[in-house]
Image (cartoon, rainbow, N blue to C red):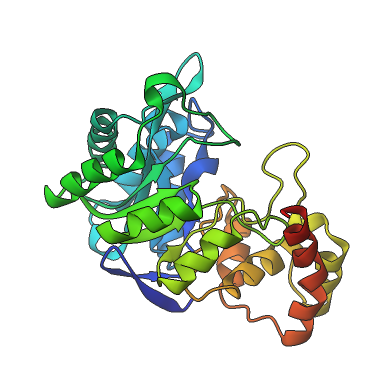
Length: 297
C-alpha cells in the first residue's frame, strides 16, 4: 500500500480499517481475545488507520482496539466518532450537547487506553439515515466546534473531523482547522458530491463510509451493478475491489475505511489500494456514476 499523506500529524495509507463490523450495537461478534488478534493482524498487514466509535458494541470494540494498539500507538491513527452513545433499549441515544461531547471524548479515551485521540469526528444527527436529533439535542454546530477546539487545546484530541454533514457545515468548520470529513459516498451514491468538491478544493481528507452502497434496505449496491461486474471481470478483481478503487480515483485525499471480520476480505480490501483503474474502465463505469448523480437532481 502506498502512503498518501498525513492525518492528524501521522503518515497514513489509503486503505484503513473500519472496526464497526467486529460487533453489533450491543456486543462483540467474537471473543475479546479474538477481536484483539484480528486487529493485530490488521496492523501487521500494514494498515495504520483504524476508524471506530464508543457506541460500537457498547464500547467493547474500543477496548479491543486499545489492547491491540498497545505499544504501537505512534504508528497508527485512531479515529473515533462522538455525538451518540449506546443505549440498551433504544440502541443509540443522541449526545449532541457540548458537555455531552466532552463526556463522549473522555469515554473514548478511557476505553482506548489513550491520553490523546488522533482524530475525533463529530457525527451530526440532522438528517437520515440513522437516529435524528430533536428537542434540546438540536445544537448549533458553532457551539459543538468550540467544545471540540477546547478539547484539542487541552490535548485530549489531535485533530477534528465532521461526519454526516452538509457542504455549508463543512464550510463553517474550515476556520477551526478541519482535518477530515466522513460522509456516505460510493459509485452508486452521489448525495455527498457537493461536500467532496469542497474538501477536495480545501485539501481536507475524505473518508467515505458505505463505500459499496447498500447499507440500508432499498439502497443500491455497487457490487450488483452489471457494469461493475463486467469491468471487474475485465480487470481481474472482485466487484468490491473495483468499487473501492473507483473511490480512490476520485480524489487523492480519499482514505478508505472498509470493515470486515474475515481475513480473506481484509486482504482483498488492502489489495484494492494498489489498483489503478485504466481509463477505459473508468469510462465504462461512468453511466453508473451519472445515474447516481441524476438521482440527486
